[in-house]
Image 1: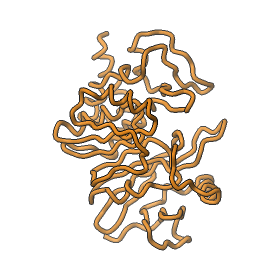
Image 2: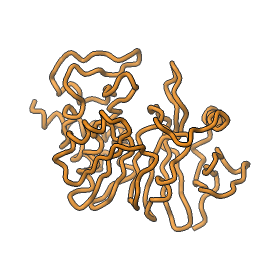
Image 3: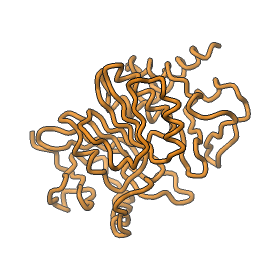
Length: 286
């Protein structure tokens, strides 16, 4: 089977898993981007329930599965689950002409898929903290005029208003630019979580935040496992991490309806209250 056909089947499978089978634009984006071009040369290391397994076969057709593949095994950084990203991209719904800040872009695979979705009139700002990964992303995305790769701390970006902020590492609180640089109607998706510990499968809950004139709607997407942020400034206190861990352990995030930003929050009406943000059970008043 030709690799283009393999990619098309892969795209349809990932969107079916993501409950987004009718999203033809997203299917086309997944089908058009060669995943192998963003992984480095084989052999590829695929994450299994036990450890990273070496994929000795050099046939790229075999990596078109819903598997996580290491791009920096020492740091625990991977090219993440395609079905997860299909689900997230379906939810944030990049449109033609949108500006998207991809925070934690890695080697740029999902930045490339986003660039297909926003088109020539759109813009993708791919921000990556690690210098080596940022350099690889810059090379991998060099032929995409609508993508800018920035080597920087993702918590400091974006610098101007955007339609979408798409975050691919866990943080104990949303960074101020992710909230304050969203346009009205803009969407943020990010994993709220704590550092991973050995043997822990999940360390965060993904939230979708939508900015409205009246405030910020918030919806829990799912539990997820993401590498924890590097270079957080300021670093969270031990008490902050313990408080978030308690909220994660007790559950109840599916009842969250809004984000309260830099305002006093009622503890009885919130799932979690952090230093600058709270996730509330109350809906915004519209």
